[in-house]
Length: 400
Image (cartoon, rainbow, N blue to C red; front, side, top):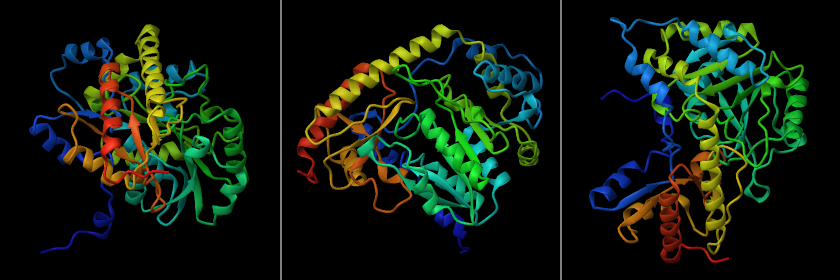
């Protein structure tokens, strides 16, 4: 029998999705599973986006331009201009989700064996994207003790090597919900300038910033316009994850031209997805106000409820709709599986994402899980009640 490739064998399983078979088995046994494991919002997709797809009456669904439909890119450029980012339609490549944008950015800017520094915990698929591109992720640790704030410049400089070519951040952060401040972004700017590194900025949660905090795009940082590659997506902004439309954006013409060659190799981004995404740009401000208020309500309830549970610590997220929570458990992977295989409370249980999968450093996150507060408030309340009941009877509970 032929062997699987070494790259294939090394490809990590998703910590968010690997427990799906256990959840499916629980459901077949009549257990209601509350999904706190995945960032799939239950917010309604803007109706005008759905209507645009329904009304599309072309007789042939043609290839689009490899960079994406020009009409969409022009409207998207105006969206960014309204946020203070000075770009035009030629500074971007429309991609098949933010995932493809990250992979293309890595392949365009880094060679095999190069290193990219990423604060951990980080979105688990960064590991997979880096593996595909043949580059090495060098983690720099942030901790729940200070709510996952960015490490000092000195800590970055300890791990910068001749192979270091880029730093990547997610702001607001998945999985922690942390929002980087102007001071923290300034420190990143200084590092990027000093070592002439690329700065990959995953800003897909830019619309979700709370408590009066504002999002500052890395595209707005002075003197590093040629270093920044912005990653974006419509998945969470408009609650339409399945359309798979993202964007790679940069003022660096060499980066965009190189990315375009990769874009040509995969032909074009999804046609129907672009139609929905372009229409979604007309979404009213009221939509985002309602979404903001809904997430604030969910977040506030979750933080208060979780911190009332003995042995649990939940930071207060400043953005996105995730948080990493410290639990009194011996092993978050075992606990997450146990919740689905061996626990139920009134025919209900909870699915969480073990935080171990969001760290590159082995053995880290064993008493942490990521929770996505993407459920309506009634379901969120029931889910946290289940979690509280589960922690009381979990065989591997740790008492400090």
